[in-house]
Length: 67
Image (cartoon, rainbow, N blue to C red; front, side):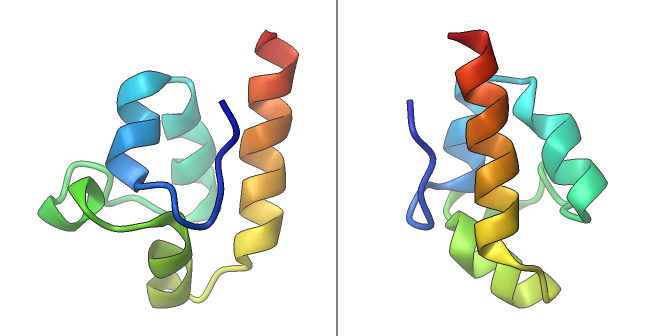
């Protein structure tokens, strides 16, 4: 799986719960909120004033290490 800017936050957490700590440490603490189920990574980063590319790199690096 490769996570992109268009990936829904809730979908990636559902597919791999190990991504939740990455999102939480980056400042996305609203994983259980209603918006997470329909909000893209890019939208969440914009709302929280985060660098989307950096977060995507960290998530995809984590996924690569899992094989």
